Amino acid sequence: MVRFWALAVIALTTLGVAAQVIAEQAPAGEGEPASEEPAVGRAYHVDEYTQAAILRYPGLKAAAADIDAAQARLTEAKLSPFMQFQGRAAFFVAPGARGTTTFSPDSQVPWSNRWGPGGEVSIEGGIPLYTFGKYRAGKKAATAGISASEHEKDRTMARVVFDVRRAYFGTQLSLDLQAMISEGKDKLRNAVDKLDARLKADDPRVKQTDYWRLVSALSEIESRESEALRLEASARGALEILSGLKPAIVPECPLDAVQSEIIELGQHVARALSNRPELFQLEAARSATDANLTVKRAGYLPDILLALRATFARTPGITDIQNPFVIDRGNFAGAYAGLLAQWKLDFGGTHARVKAAKAEIQSLKAKTEEAEQGIEIEVTALYEQLQDAKRRLASWTRSEKETRKWFVSAGQGYEVGTTSAMELVDSIEAYFSARSKRLMATAEYNLAIAGLEKATNMPLVAQKGWRPVDCDE
View 1 (cartoon, rainbow, N blue to C red):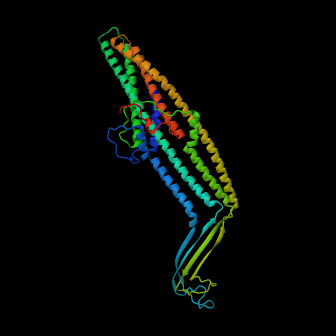
View 2 (tube, rainbow, N blue to C red):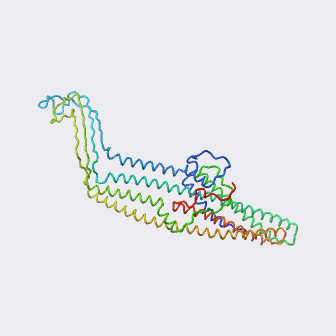
């Protein structure tokens, strides 16, 4: 009986997670392909699917919009402090008033006089001359926001590239498994038909148990074929949703291990610690928190401003008193400029805010150390996964070659009656088990390389190096 239990494992590792990622991040129907509709039936390589996904992935569009928003906040931080002016325009009605600076026939509030219109226009504000670091800190925090948004885009890019590769290799794996299963199924079906005919002819050299054994093996293969079909549908669906290229067709090339740059674990870890966007984001957060601490500390000190004010009011129904020492409520004009020092005298609150800002800095330091440890663990696990897949790939490649010889010999022997049904089933089991495990090791090897590229944010394979070598499309 042919056993393909590892097929279920690869379903989870290579396609199940990808399908979940796609369902969460790229709902069907969201976004449009960035290029023209592909010709029906054309096959695309993994790098072509990757480029198509990058052009249309909603998460990358959102990241680009976040960068634009962060850049706008930097512009605001640069200009807004110099635009702290307030303007006011008022229109009103007031009772008329007559008189001079020494005498008026009207009461203080002449309600009975005729009411008439009036208006007032004023503008006032200040230009900061020295803020004890607040202005520079504001620009620093806004710049850190741009950096964080840019690195978030890099992180999203790495994720979508990995998801495309996972779906692509899952598709290749499922197709190769189907081809393998089809080959074994045809051999077994022929054997079952011949054995059934011999049983009906009462051939004393065959046994009923041999027939049952062959039928059981055939049923097992057919059930595994159904699983391979399901895996293919899931992988193709993931490619179509991510890239927008429909139908998702991969070249008819055998799944093969990609050729990558070979470096040691320590170099992988060093690359990851130097290039991971998550660490850059934490660094940007640290910069913003440092700026926040500067602002909080500057709260103890005033802002030095060049204060400006200009006011003009006119009410025709009220006599205009032309005396600068007399307050005329309806008719006046004035302007002044001077230095102004202003600050909040909430020193207790300022002390608490400074303390909180210092604690936030310490928290970010600890989170950065935690992230570095997590990255080192992640890279180490992926590196060991790659080494494991490499060793298994070599072992199962050798086993596949040898067991195929057994499979061919047993098949020929069964045709002429020199090989028993049990030996035929055993040879099929050995060969197809070795072949399926070699395919899975190949897929895991490629995914481990893709995972290391994502974990280190550095390429190990040239863009077109992901394509199979010596394959006629």
